[in-house]
Amino acid sequence: MTTVVLATHNAHKVQELSRILGPQLGGIELVAYDGPEPVEDGLTFAANALIKARAAAAHTGLPALADDSGICVDVLGGSPGIFSARWGGPARDSDANLELLLWQLSDVADGHRRAQFACAAALALPDGIERVEESRWPGRILRERAGAQGFGYDPIFHPDGSPVSAAEMSADEKNAVSHRTQAFSALLPQVLALLG
Image 1 (spheres, helix red, strand yellow):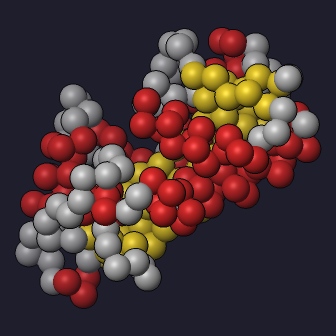
Image 2: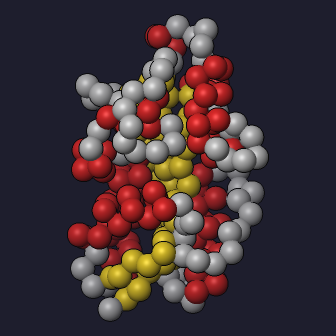
Image 3: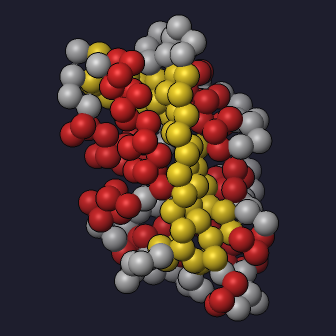
């Protein structure tokens, strides 16, 4: 059985990626990463996803999967973007991030609250082979929190075509359509071709 490390220390992401990828991986086992966290100094989601995947592959000697994702608000020129996890300050507190974004958009009319979750999914092999796929999940920013599922900005993100916020969806409902699912689904055939 081939072992692949998930290059994240975020327990929510490990659970989500295991749900998304697990049934489709066949003989590939996913394990959590316990190595050092690299400095994410890339200027794009793809660059940061590759930084994490490369670091995990180098540390463990195993193939590594990573993602970088965030919320991109049109009226803020695409911000928070790659800074989504630390938008509210260095503590990386998801409530502080969310509350700051709500405050920044408090005077913005409903018609101008367009946003999208973005995700870059990366595979890095110890021999230097790399692959990246990206996806977007369009929607809008709500005026207040709705729902208690999910994590991060999910309670204030209302996906296009959905009757509820991302945080009001079940894990299965969210995983059927999310930015992370789309990016990893695009990457999966390459993972299977290289490792299967």
